[in-house]
Image 1 (cartoon, helix red, strand yellow):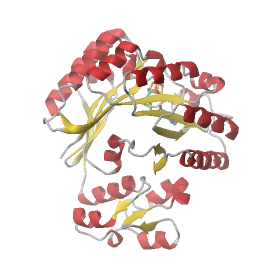
Image 2 (cartoon, rainbow, N blue to C red; image 1 turned 45 degrees about the horizontal axis):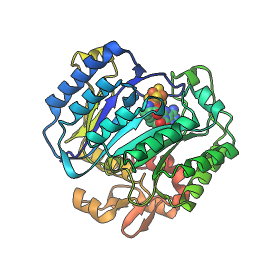
Image 3 (tube, helix red, strand yellow; image 1 turned 180 degrees about the vertical axis):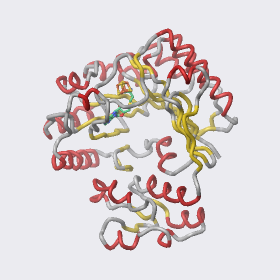
Image 4 (cartoon, rainbow, N blue to C red; image 1 turned 60 degrees about the vertical axis):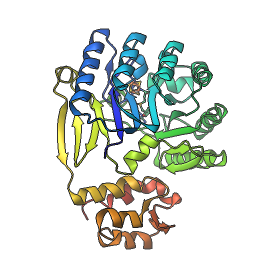
Length: 363
Ligand SMILES: C[S@@+](CC[C@H](N)C(=O)[O-])C[C@H]1O[C@@H](n2cnc3c(N)ncnc32)[C@H](O)[C@@H]1O
Ligand code: SF4
């Protein structure tokens, strides 16, 4: 059963120097064509399921003007929601107006994710981010005024020449905002981004590790649960939408470059805006066989601190986990452990999770 939908809005008012997402510079002439195509894609594929989570991401959904933004919300209102649902929109603070906040409230949005990244002006400038700390504080006050409590902020660390003191200062400032969810990302230099083309290098591995450790320790000390490699939440504020991904659940992906997983197919939409607007939505599809499904269950599930439930795995796949994967060896090496019938990566090994997860592919 499909209970989640991701919707991609690719327009941004400026392009950040590190970004590899499917995005284009906002141009008014594209917007209604794009939204009409999105509406068509949803009408063609959506089977009227009651959804538990909806996530509108980008790009920058709030880069749309008020009329366009309301049209987007109207299109998404055709998706049926369960009684207890989570409906998230990604917002950039420069384009978040009171009218847009009111519209989100009116259409039942109940979770907001904001790209804050850092408060250091010189880093924001190098990243080509256009907001200020004051705008972030104001936006959060505005959201709270309209009853939005469930807010996430995205935080990027390991920026070029960043020091651990700067990371600590960002963390202190974020904590003052009293936000229930923080997603943290170590900067990735993605091919063909301005950072990559300008030969910007990532910081030393050792420093990156120290920053990660510092973030984990500080957020835990301040009441956040570290529930996924990069994600921290106050109790009850875990992202239900992202948990659907990590639980290997089905979800629709609508919009430019969006990915989806529907029984038993993983698909990715085109990143070509002209093609998308002309109704050529899908770029590729892959049938997920039984073995790949089990691998995904592990690779995604082990990102969660709680890990993967051994009993549920057996019920779902009819096989013992250790009859398929090299779990015993990894346990001996201290890279995996069993706790309360869950197989998990010990917290102190999380930084090496990529290496550990590789062991679950093609065994
Ligand atoms: C699609 S973007 C967020 C939405 C919004 N457009 C914004 O930038 O504020 C999702 C998040 O991914 C993270 N991100 C994007 N590119 C990244 C990169 N190259 N390295 C690390 N984190 C990245 C940023 O924290 C960003 O906020
Ligand atoms: S990071 Fe966000 S705002 Fe910046 S270009 Fe990418 S999607 Fe747009």
